[in-house]
Amino acid sequence: MPKPRKPFTKSHFKWDRELKKGDVETYLSQDDKNIRVSKGEAVISRNMDQLLSVITDPVIRLKWAGHLATSELIEGCGDFRVFRIVEKKKKASMVAPREKVFVTKVFTLDDGSKVVLGRSVEHESCPEKKKESVRAFVHLIAWVLTPDKKDPEKTKAAYILYVNPKG
Image (cartoon, rainbow, N blue to C red; front, top):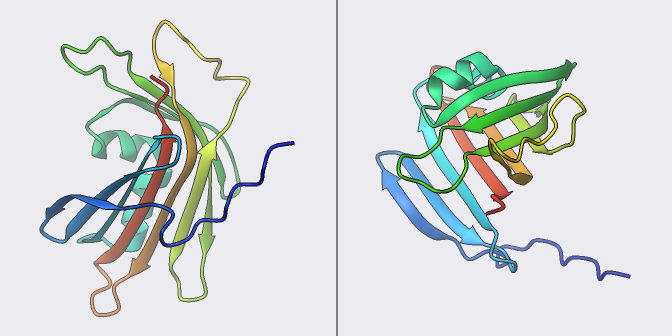
């Protein structure tokens, strides 16, 4: 029987600052199996609903995220949504583009903040196409969006992405 995984603690990941540009800070870490984990924090000059639509609407996401070739909603039921995204092939790269199929759910906290949690899923309408892309496994993708108390047209945003790119 496998041993239960230790719970995450503040010291579980050693975060290295990757980038600080204006109000945006991003950090990288790796877990004990060398799987990359990234997180970011920023104050975005958009209200919370606008920012939430970038996360939950595949058409808006595709316009916003220049690294994506496709972004589509596979299935939705209430606040649960299954997405499929495929990254663009990188120039001069021998590696196939990454594909992710994942489910998300939106939660609203008592203070009005929105939390979006997601992870990889298998879906019958999205079989893996090994010749076209590599299916990455999303252990966790999460966003926390909090409206700025002084300016409702700004949102404090934090995200974490814990993904095995498989390759």
